Length: 279
Length: 262
Image (cartoon, rainbow over all chains, first blue to last red; front, side, top):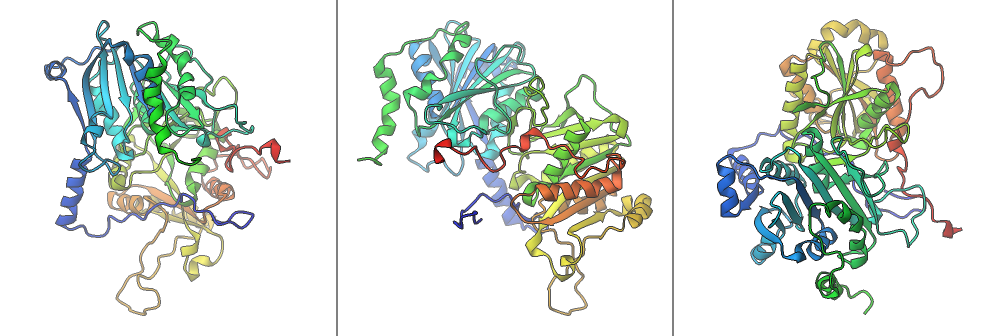
C-alpha cells in the first residue's frame, strides 16, 4: 500500500485465502495434516494428587482463578503473590507450535504455563502463561483448562499486557500516559472493575479473549485487566499498574504489597542484557 | 455451536438470515454492521466455535455510555422479530485449517433453525475480474436452485446481474471445458454456495468487486443493494444516507494527530 506521501508500506492483508479444499487431497496429505494437528494439541499435566481426583470425576474446587498472560503480568504475580511461598505447583500446560524451540527449549516450555494452588485456601488457583499459544490452540486451551474447574461461584481474573501501539484513541497519547490499565468483563461479572472499561474500537485478542468468550457463553464471572505499556519486556513501572487489582484479590489471597528490590530485579534485569540499542 | 444469550432459545422459523463472508475488504461484515446498528437489533446468541480466532470487545453498537459496557464475541446472532430477520455477524477470521468445518457448522445450524432463506454478503478481488465482469455495476448475485424457485420473479424485476462464470483456461477455445464459478478473495463464499446447492438450501450470495482500502463506500453500496430486495428500511426516507454508522467504525485510520506536530 502506498501512503499519501508516496512511501510504500507493507500492510497486513485482510484478503483471505481461496477455499482450496476442492483440490483433491491424497491420503498422504491428509495423514500429514492429521499428524500435525495431533502434535499441536494442548496437553495438561496435573500433579498425581490432582489427576487422581479429576479421574474420579471431582473437578477442581475453585473460587478465584487468576490468570496472568504475558511477561509483565506473570512477573507481577511472581513478585507480589507467588513470592510468599504459600503456593503449591499443581500442574502445567504444554502446547507445541511454530514458535516452540526445538530440543533445547524443553525446560523453557515446561515452565512457560504453570498452575499454582494456595496452601491455606485451596480454592484459589493461579496460572502463569509466558509462552506463545497459537491462534488455533487458544480455544482448545481454554476448553481443557475450564473443563477441570468447578464452575459454581467461580471468579476469573485475567491480567494481560500489550503494547500501547495497539491502543486506539482520538486523543494524542503523550509520553506520560503509558502504562495504563483497561478492563473488559463478562455479563455475569457483578463487581466493579478497578479501572476504566476498554473503549471501542479497541479489542482484546489472544488468550484473554478466548477466556472471556468461554466465560461469557458459559455465564461465568470474568474480568480482563489489559495493561498498555510502552516498554518492551518486563519493567517495574508497568507492573505497578496492576496494583489496584491486588486490593480486589487481597480478600482471598495473601499478598506481598511491598516486595524487595531484589525480587523485582530478578525479573526486570533479563531484558537489560538483550537491549544494545544505546551502547 | 449456537448458544442462546437469553433464558429461552429463540425461534428463527421462517426468518431471513443475513450473514457476511469474511472476504476482501471486510465489506460483508461492514454491511452487516450497518444493518444491526440501523435496525437496532438485539443480540440473541453466540456462535461459539473453535473455527474462529478469539477476540472480545465492548458493545460495538453502543449509543450511550450505559450500554457501552457489554461484552461481545467473535460470532453473534441478532434478531428483529417484527421484520422476521436474523443477522449473524462474524468479527474474526476463520482459521485456515478449519474453513470446511466452519461451513458444515453453518449449514447444519441454518438447516436446524428453519430459516426460510439465507443471504450471504461477500466481496471479491476487483483486480481479478475478466472482461465481462468489468462491465456495468460492480455488484453481482448468485442463488441456489432452491431459492430460485420462489424468488425468480422478484430477482427478474430487480434486474440484477448474476455472477459470471469464467472459462477455466482463458484464451483457449476448447469446447470441452465448462466455465466455472470463481470468487477470488471471497473466503468461504464459494464453498458455502456449492454446499447449499448440494444440500438444497435456499441461499443467495450478494457480492461486490472491491479492492482493499477504505471499504466503507462498498459497504454502503452492498447494504443498499440488499435493501432493494429485502426492503429492510422504508423507502419513504429519501435521505442520501439512511444507514447508521456504528461507534466501532471510529478511528479506522489510526489515532489522533500529536499536537506537537504544529
